[in-house]
Image (cartoon, rainbow, N blue to C red; front, side):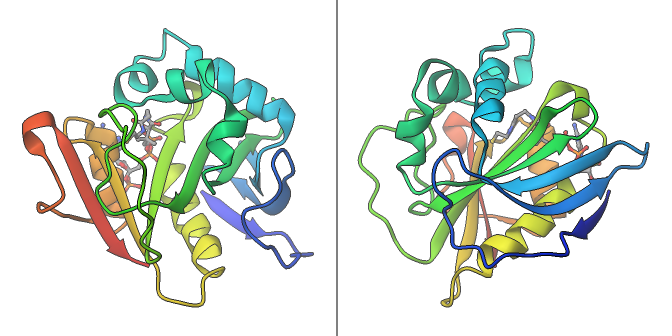
Length: 205
Ligand SMILES: CC(C)(COP(=O)(O)OP(=O)(O)OC[C@H]1O[C@@H](n2cnc3c(N)ncnc32)[C@H](O)[C@@H]1OP(=O)(O)O)[C@@H](O)C(=O)NCCC(=O)NCCS
């Protein structure tokens, strides 16, 4: 996927206010489909995010993520309060949400909703989690590596200190494990819990 930064880049302070969004780039995939990339999610696409999270036919979302509870049944407003910064890729012609990557401060290795997140997070400044979603029509088309590299760059520019990225996933989720390794993440066995298939991967930003 070829990404072109928006020419009139504003100085962005993250996270952006809830339901606001700033366009940061245009992109085009190998089949000529055109996308707009934003930081922050407009209300219209939050509605799509809720519907996609409730989509029972998307077994990858239902089996590999806690998004049904997080966005489908839960409150986007409550989630946003956790200092999360979402980036989205929108199919320009269809005007639909193709993919989302979000970041936020979260202590290394803390389990996700799917793996039974319960306790309160103790934030360590240097560790930021990264989370990926690509929706069925756009999945497996090779969008996510370039999208990830681009938004990881935008996100880390916000921090003067060195931040580190980590991600938690099911070690049977081949697409996710492969994508993270291709992005240069390395397995962190100390914080993984493979008995319950919880794999933690880390990367210096
Ligand atoms: C995980 C996810 C974001 C990956 O996106 P994707 O569209 O499938 O991945 P892409 O097509 O962009 O491929 C990214 C890389 O991973 C590789 N890859 C993708 N699927 C793969 C698979 N099943 N097995 C091995 N490698 C795979 C690709 O070859 C590509 O590498 P390349 O660019 O060097 O060729 C997507 O599958 C998804 O949203 N799944 C459901 C939600 C989910 O599981 N999120 C993670 C929860 S922790």
